Length: 148
Image (cartoon, rainbow, N blue to C red; front, side, top):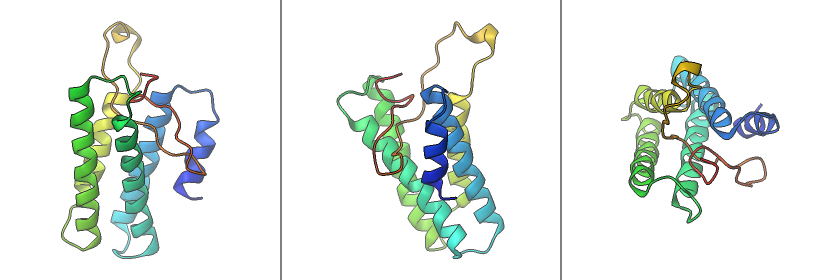
């Protein structure tokens, strides 16, 4: 199943955008981890890296939109991370980058998206993700978009 098919399946559930984005990043992290354990240059390796880059490209697009309601400074910081992901992906593909760094960035963002314990639910925490394209390229709302 391709990454977009998996995302399309999860978007049709009743979970909130942050949960969907958390799940998407978890799936991408799983693909990157399996790729890391496999042979460099295989289709699985390249597909995982490109899927991760597409997710981050979608985040950048969402964060760049006028309708995104996150604070400008936070949006700029996350866009910067997304741009770094793009550069690091190319370096990993050419053998000079670090796939572990990509995995760690995703996990860090996932920590910000993780469901909050009931006791801490009153404390607001900024969202750390964006809309990723669903199958067919249609953007879906997210924790970094106007639904935040």
